[in-house]
Image (cartoon, rainbow over all chains, first blue to last red; front, side, top):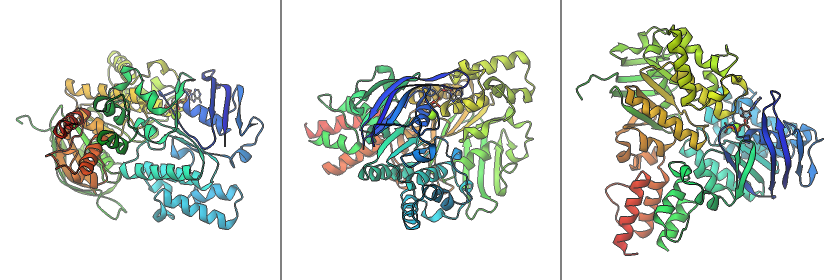
Length: 265
Length: 290
Ligand SMILES: Nc1ncnc2c1ncn2[C@@H]1O[C@H](COP(=O)(O)OP(=O)(O)OP(=O)(O)O)[C@@H](O)[C@H]1O
Ligand SMILES: [Mg+2]
């Protein structure tokens, strides 16, 4: 599903202009990553696309249709949103009930529900936690519950707000499988992240925000490669820094595998 | 070393009440004043529990079965009066929301909260608050409500409220998971610099490159036990670090894959940091003549 963010602005009740004339097109089936400093407006933009906040100016179109007058309940069929803090979206007594809530509310048939829930629990490594109380699990496991609940709704658009914060190596590997699965299913994905290595590996397009505006959009490899000096030390993705120092002809690898391929060609 | 350790753990075992396995087992560890210690481990390996223990939250906040000895400045941690703890140790929690006092209307008041309870003279207090806000880059939002901050801003506030108390031992449980990369670099440099003024720093992190670059010693946990400890620039590419679920930096991964694909013999040690990796690949390329 294609997303057009058409010159939107947003002000919080205290008057703070968190979004200022944001313009961005996200083609259907693309995985776009949204990065930028703390407080630049990433979560605010995500809330607007999900219909939780209404832009003060401008509008957002999904497949050409404005969401301005669309009910949250109808938008829920199209846009899934994994919150930055899992505790903002977890309300049930067991992991299973939590993940089942969305599909039920969307009115999926019983059989489809069961299948989607099963698949979502498997992808997030929660099959054995069905009857566990979410708050008996760690923060990163609760993040996986939030991801599972969103996956189970099988929406065309999925927004992840900091999906990998606090995840360990194994959980990161799960996350990569999830991204691949969503790609196979032709979903449109927006990932908000401070994990530059992840962003470089996973996204087709990179949008950089600063102070409520989108300041750059483009190919992640090129944007990272050409980023200013001050960004590079410990900040640019590891493969970009290693490529710059080791590979010839300004080649830049996205992944570990690609780096080694470039090197031994 | 000749100085006595500031923290000493001997044969520490801990099982949460109701827990089926020990969260910490046979932990023996001494930490010198001014050291920067990294704690790594897959989620569930015991990083947070070790932080709670060192911060004096066991058994007062987390009940369970404890054995062994754990001391700060030769005082048994569990016996230290809760009011006295901040004079010795401060902990930044992994979940920054839990750090909020829920008693304050502004960021400034939130940072002042802990200090007020310590009875610090007003002049010193104001100075420490300003410093803490500055170190975490949130001075400009001092008058904002803590509840309308972005995720990263909230995490900065949690760090500021602990830094303000200026305890000699500072423990950070994944303090930068929500910080932007530039902010992470700034805040971590500030934290690491505190060791120069004598603070002892203990930091649990999933961000392996940071741990490798900036800590003096790393303690790797697996299933509640110390798997291995030592110089991070030497031990973090060990096979057991990878197999315990901690993983490797991409620099280590790339060199391991390179050796596998070129079927070269393996060197004594795989590189961990960027500089080590550059050296590794330059040497390899030199040897192979391309
Ligand atoms: N309810 C609110 N009232 C007032 N200001 C707010 C509110 N929520 C957020 N803000 C401010 O709006 C700006 C954008 O916030 P947002 O949460 O979108 O940032 P972000 O880019 O997601 O940051 P982070 O990387 O820290 O998550 C920040 O300066 C934040 O302090
Ligand atoms: Mg955010």
